[in-house]
Length: 108
Image (tube, rainbow, N blue to C red; front, side, top):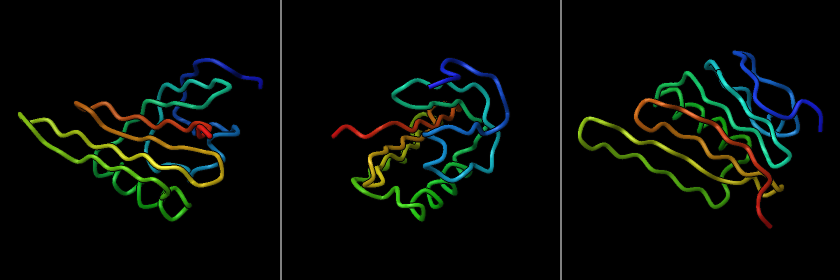
């Protein structure tokens, strides 16, 4: 797989993993591509992520889904993880203001 490693870009890259999910409607900053998956740090609010989760569900990422949405001491933690039943797993979240998206091959 070519192009492995870290990349700095506001563009959603084209690779095996990003082709599995809808393109997000928010800025993507630092991304890392490995043979196991793609992970990106994003400029997304919790509201942005919740909207994105709905598009992920419509795209089939709703198997074995797990959601965390909790607030404590002025901080909100939000995450969603699921697989698409076709060998790919997505994990998105926002913890203490940092958002991320990870797409990996599901363990099988």
